[in-house]
Length: 171
Image 1 (tube, one colour):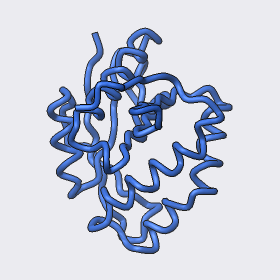
Image 2 (cartoon, rainbow, N blue to C red):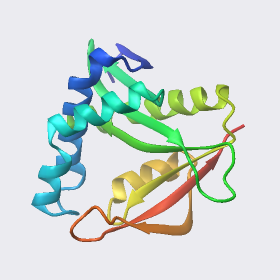
Image 3 (cartoon, helix red, strand yellow):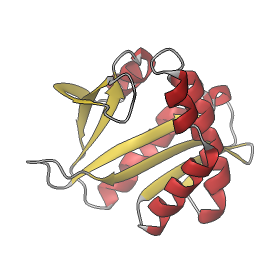
Image 4 (cartoon, one colour):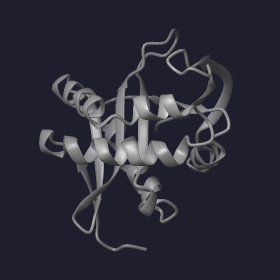
């Protein structure tokens, strides 16, 4: 386990590295779940950088995990606008560099993010896990998230994969 772990809110200067971490993670996490064309679209660095710049300028919470002085993880959050979900945040991205996976860093990044959301007044958190992404589903269940049988169809993917909603109450 790496002892030099630091987690903080993202800065605009982090955007290029954040985009690279997410793109690298997508290639690992979704290689067998989505098409090559979709992988290419969603790992496009210019597109990712623009999305992160917009999110940061909108004031969305984005946390980064640094190990050995380098960004190895990204977690982004937005307010959830679903019915009957007041005071709810949505974690829409939690990605680690493949070299950081399986070392407890994802749990540290998620815990930091959840604590930040509690301080901001959120009462619960939701997230979506793509069908077939058993590693992520197991991780989120281990971290206290529970699936609620609701799912979305990923309309922006050529294969129309399903993503299942997980919910966790905050203290």
